[in-house]
Image: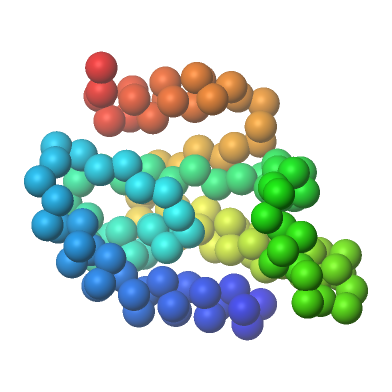
Amino acid sequence: MIQCEDEFLIYDEISKLVFGYLDKIDADFIVTEGAAYTPNVMAKYRNKEYISIIPTPEFQISHYRERKWVPFILEGCSDKQQAFQNWMERDILFAKQVKLECKENAVPCIVNDGFRSEDEMFRIVKERFILK
């Protein structure tokens, strides 16, 4: 729980720097990816539309297990399985908090359970932003 809260505090703290950089980009729209773009952070800085895509716990865990770099992150842990489980529990709490922030900020949210294809997810986002 504390790690999850700290993560939100870190993203809030660095957001001024991130948006200082993004504001310099001359573009009609910007697509970003990353946990740092929480709904509360976006509410402070955004002047355009925003959508959040949140994984279900099952989707998140199954996809992290497939990532080749995960063993390198867990390399120094004495109990790699427990470390992975703790990591996933923190990220599940993070996703729940993001979903709550979406509701509080009236931000649209897609919960990704892995049953929609990438094309379908892309179509939903395109429709939300009225892109061709």
